[in-house]
Image (cartoon, rainbow, N blue to C red; front, side, top):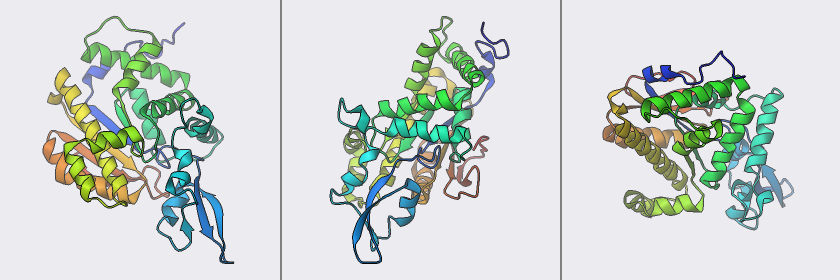
Length: 313
């Protein structure tokens, strides 16, 4: 028997405004156990192989005097951050590492500062985008979100999510006959976006974009990851805009929040929103949250376009 506490179809979503979210993954949603392979110059003058977390790498990556890529280069350093070859599922550690990180949270380890924001986003059935510096396919990132739903949301919260999803479908898509929970979840997750900016397919799509083709031509190697996040964010904003125009939702308040634990990304995205996105999409309000300070549980608001406060961040 289905729980009576939460309506099967939540028609109250028709009274909501539109809030959407863009999340970095590592150290923002979860503290992943995936390690980066480096070499470290020890006190005896010998370079030795070491593995460091993403949080440690953020601190030492500029220390080229003591840290460098392994013999295989940076491709080898970040091998665990990409999908394995077809048929080599064991070489793709992202799903396994996501499960391990979620199990650690279950046992009391503190999650990333945007962990609860993603939970709230899923419970409410709002669209979102995952934007990460990893090299996984969109399908792999979507699988990780499904794992997150299974581990992080209680049965009651999953029922709440499904009732909200059906409410949005009735309101915006004008349907009365719904699919199974699995089918409706497929539809919802298919409406979201998943961008791993070092994934080959993503890089090719970005290189073929007329605007970003020119930007890449003059970009430094160090600035390319931040530029790629710009492209991924623009892609999601355009997706949201076209979806709302199709359903007539642009008449309501629309807001998009972005959270990232990398200070460089935060500065780049903040500047990008102020100089380009806020001018092109004047009806959309933007917020950027810097989650690099581990002493702040929800991060720090650093950029606002329009009057907006995003609960949950």
